[in-house]
Image 1 (tube, one colour):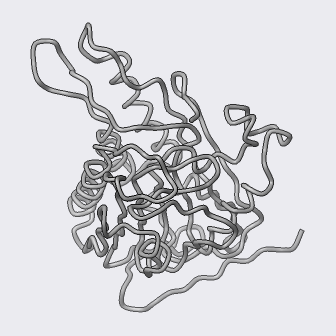
Image 2 (cartoon, rainbow, N blue to C red):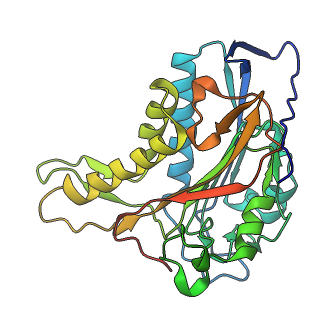
Length: 307
């Protein structure tokens, strides 16, 4: 296999950092977030999609929690929500052609499927090799959508992804082509949905699927945990809230979750780096453009559904 190397793009005067084990760790002085959220699917061509009431709430909670957590722990970093596309402004053209490479985080919330399509306000976009590539300043992409990262064959969607015969090479190639410097793409291997449920029979307090973003921001930014472990933990906690900690007598609308991550392993100054283990406090403020392969992990909580 061809020897790999890592290309660092460093812009003086916009970052501060230090060196650990021969690797330069840098924090940007500015941190940008781009979001695309669709709740109204009444205009979408090519999709008999139901409206999703909680997508906008998911987006708002995600941005709010990330912003507040960075502001509290790293007050020198200026966080900006540079692109906030909702419903009519969250079109295929905006997602594909806007310069999301100017943002450390890109977040999508809406319908998706195992054929690697995302549904926008105007139409459904099927992703092929090179349809959308993430790089530049983008470190992490979040796809709050059903099954987009499921690279299993269509008749084996719930099968073990560690078994090669269950996987679709074309799907794997599409996901791999999205990596143009981005460190990791997080999403779901099964169906997912937004919901809420009463916490107690005697009060109006509710658990919400939005809560995952509170947990994520806490674990990632404030606690400094590893990306994949904390992403799993945040979603597992939401599942337990619904399945074990909700009010007696209320039906749990969540059957299960199967969070997933696509990530890379790279060699930086002779040190092997696994981006699924990346920490916010140890982020590499540079695109990773040389690596052996894109890898995918997924784990199931409860009884996830696939549709």
